[in-house]
Image 1: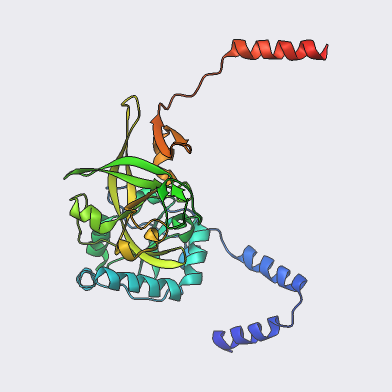
Image 2: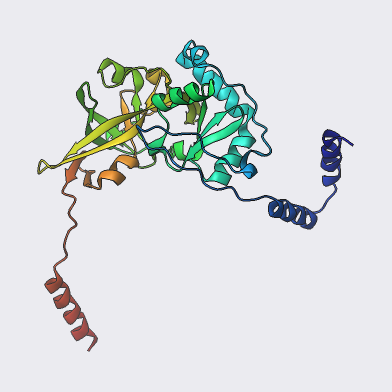
Length: 323
């Protein structure tokens, strides 16, 4: 009996099995699988090399899709690259879910249907240079997949910048974006529901902050139930406090193509950037959101010290009342 026929027979018979039996079957399957090891991470700006992948990860390779050459990939427009990524994700949805979960990975690099590298956070996501290096070693331009859970943006509206809803505003955050070529100050919408930061790709190109590179990989994701395409680029973010203290941090940002048609402008049509919590978690400033004045202030990062003496007096008065 072939494997295909055997699987069809199993599927037919499983329809008549009760819940307890199904649980026992799942337990046996789990016991037969070996938990794969976490792959080494690649640092931003550095070269990552092929790694030995445990057999448990790739022994049942069902990935569907043939890698292109670098030349073939470069001939595709950003829209065509996004379309390719969408088809790959749809065809390999279950395979990707399994690999992301088993490796606890934020991103995967796939060549010839096998995972050759992965990382546990998006700060070391492979850039154009690393993708070209993979091609030079393998003759194939790699597929790079980002875990959807880490790209997710929690839905909802908030305050500050006026939105399309009357009386609604979005909190803003003044930041300076810096690259080796130029520096630009912008005011982005600040949203803690997003783990990363998203900026208009064409705006960044026009400001000479980023440029297209051979090997750029365009990712497909969704926001407000609408797809969008983006490419990750490293940039320096700077914040300046009221006391002129400067907070600076290099991070990966997601440059969204066709920004005016993207879901990022549905709530605020004038938005050029959505600043997520990654920047603030790295810099750790104190941020004051003044809802009365609809203003954002960057304060000192030093914590507020409580006056111990005042606390003691309050405690002592409380004790006297009880007595």
